[in-house]
Length: 112
Image (cartoon, rainbow, N blue to C red; front, side):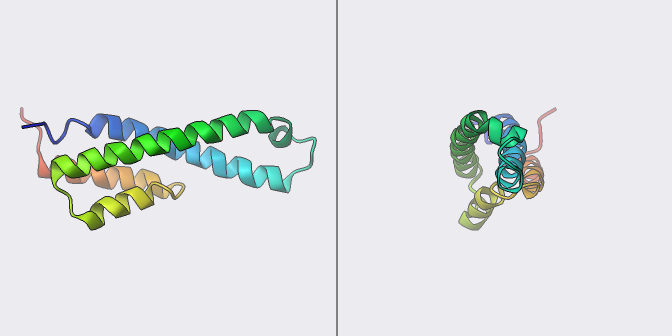
C-alpha cells in the first residue's frame, strides 16, 4: 500500500511557493493598472508575464498533488474541491495548506 503521507511534503512546498507567487501576481496586476508607464511594474511587464506563466504551471502541479493526496487519503469530494479552490485566494491559500497538513497528520500519525 502506498504511503498516504508520501505527497504531503511536496504539497506543502508547492502550496507555499504557489501562495507566495499568487500574492506577487495579484500585486503586480494591481500595480500595473494603478501606476504610470514609467513605473517598475510597467517597465518589467515581460518579467511579470513570465512569473505569471510559471505560477500557472506550478498551480496545475499543485492541483495534481492535491488530487494524489485526496486519492491516497480517501478524502470526501467536498474537502478536495475546497482545498483546490482555497488555493486560488491570496493569503487564504496558506490557511488551506495548514488545514490540509493538519488533516493528513491527524488521519495518519507519524510512526515513531
